[in-house]
Amino acid sequence: MAYLTGPRLNFTGKFIADVSTVNNFPSNYDGTNYTAADYANWDIGYWNPYGTGVWRLTDCAVTGAVRGDGSTVSGDPVLSMTLADADDQPPAKMVDLDSEQQMVSAIWGLVVRLVGGDGQAALRSNFAVASFTDLWKRSLTPGSLPQHKLHPACMYGAAWQSVLSDLAWGDVAASPFLQELQAAAGPGGLLSIKFNVVGYNAGYWIGDDGTRYPPLPDFTMGLITGSIGVARADEPRFFTLGRKLQPSQKQSQSAPTLFYYATAVVDEARKALAIDLGNSIPFKEWRGDIVGETLQVGYLDAVQGFQPLGEVTPDNGWYRRTAGIADITLTDAQLSAVAANPLAVRKAGADTLLGQEPADGKALRADEFVFRMAPGDSAETTVWATVFGKPLADAEVALAFDNSSLGGEGDPPVGVPAGALGFPPS
Image (cartoon, rainbow, N blue to C red; front, side):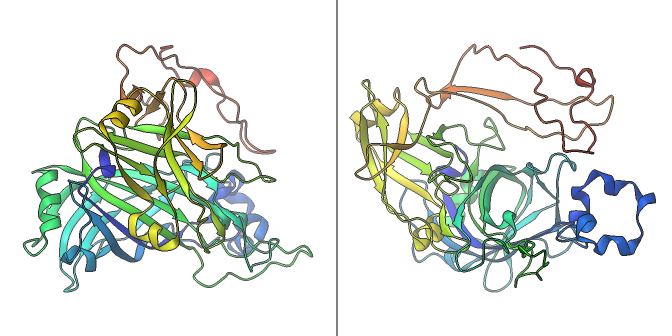
């Protein structure tokens, strides 16, 4: 059940994504049209033409931990550790799939280390290349910054989930939690990592009068909050094999949603529900307070009535401490009920649902969903079908070619010719 079941640790801090925006326009790949000086032009170089592509962790501290039995960790040295990237090789890089597909940016070459106050690594690992998912407009307003000056990218949030491999453990004798995490991972094992990013600083946009404003302080940096737990070899690497709640309200510019996708798992042995709201709740303003309205987590019974299981009251401290994950203890009756009924979330005291599972509980997802391929290449992925979080045996999955995105004016056509990509019909 990936990072959602214990033992897991949570962390929060900042990240650097120094992307080069020259790559945002396919016409810029025709080097005969431009000189070096041209790339200072906003219309060519965009908002960060000299970006290095570097993606880094910075100022990331462990903020909380949960044992395998669900109890909260206290007084353990892990709570004073930091999360860092490589100290002996170049930093990771973040790149888009291509100029026409910038919605699945991937991190390559990331080393994740857990470092104690003495500077020694208690853990070193390699992050499997992964693309972000669940991109949405997470900041409701720009706050004190003028709307027309703040770059639109600043308002969005997204999440990455992957696995950590090649685990190299340091001295963990002083940390009972890390000993438990090491034992749960096992020799040659994997860890699961998921983190949410928000409050990215893409600088100022163009003013109403055409003025191009200078970058804000900590340009190309954003806020990160996430978790690390145990990964099983027989589970997906890039998403959690659990229960997927969908937002009930469709997102739009005029009416931003108050809830986005969430994942939950039911731990039958521990009689508990863990739900990840880490990329589900918006912030009131850019880098401001998270929306703090009390949420009820529950399920829909046979007549679609909402039955509460527990409550969550978000605030910034809760978010940093838990990475947005709530653990709810279930009775035997509740455990039986959620096994065959859709989970749902609503505001306390309200009848309208913010998000819920499909009524039939069915979910479908390909594990690896982004590929870099040249003509003649082939690729494989595993498609996982579940019902209420359990394997859906003998599911028949139909496949179809989606050519709905044809690129912008003057851009190369996307998905043309359709026959260049072959796949089975089911």
